[in-house]
Image (tube, rainbow, N blue to C red):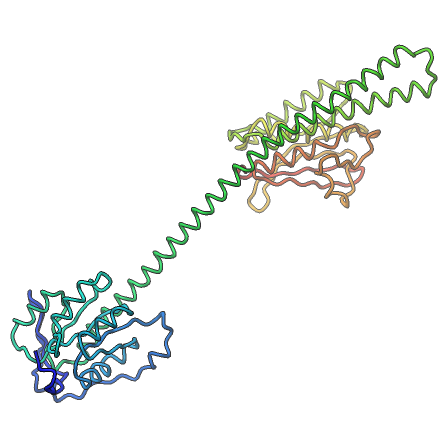
Length: 439
């Protein structure tokens, strides 16, 4: 070790390289020819002008300011942050506050030489794997090089060194540090994404549990309300019937009509309660995916309608072989409502016609039920699928206004869309698609 009180001349920085054990090559040019060559300088932007995230830090350790300036000039073209230390202790202090891509460490320094400094660097977890390149002018043999590799050096250069050679070696570790930083950031983002996904899944599970709880409460409430409403309605109906039977001879025409309206209103209210419960049940029904023959479903529903109204003559057109994947039970309910509507609203049409078919629009299969019945005014189309919304008087066409709301709930549950088009007195077309079922 050099004496602290003795000034050590600055080492030259342009000569041979001693390879690592196992055969790293020596520089082919002579020390004399390289020492005569002027140091190569590159024009480059000031590193301070670059974004901090794009630069890494390089630690230069040498007790000779001239050598530090020479190293700084060599590495300026790499556009990285260069931090200088004039002793091993200064280097260790810098390691407490900075992470470095590579350390260029002089071997012969007062107080604490490069080998001692490297050993202490390797004891610290954060810098255990930081690449260290030793620089020395004192050793022309492989003895010191072996010692350097023993304390964890990645290379051992003998001064004077070739600037291009130093830059090339350092640039490898700079790129490696940048890649490692990118991987670290990606890993951090991945962890953040995973954490966000876990939190989202937990939130979703909590919302699902809350929704299930509210659905159970709503179901209990619906049945309780329906029971509480049905009881007085049954009494109203019963007392109305008793009144007509016991006072039949005493009631005039108006009295009999009033009692009949009371009974009719009671029956309508009872039907509305049934429809609300039915709509609620359909909305919560479990979806079971299976292959469904829509053409066969339509044919069976139309046969039942003919049996229930044998006096009518209705022309029906059903496209054969329409197969879909969906819940057969829910699709039967939806088609029953659509076909019953078509049957009802063509009742006053002497040449009634009902058609079921399929077409492909924008690559998506679309299914439809079309009739030439009463139709509707398109300015009211937004009301069509609302519960209890009716576009015709009950005296013209009976019903509670719950059928199309049920159709919409079912098609939405099956991941599709439903819409209607109509012209007054010319008929209506109800179209729907099927997609992936919703939970």
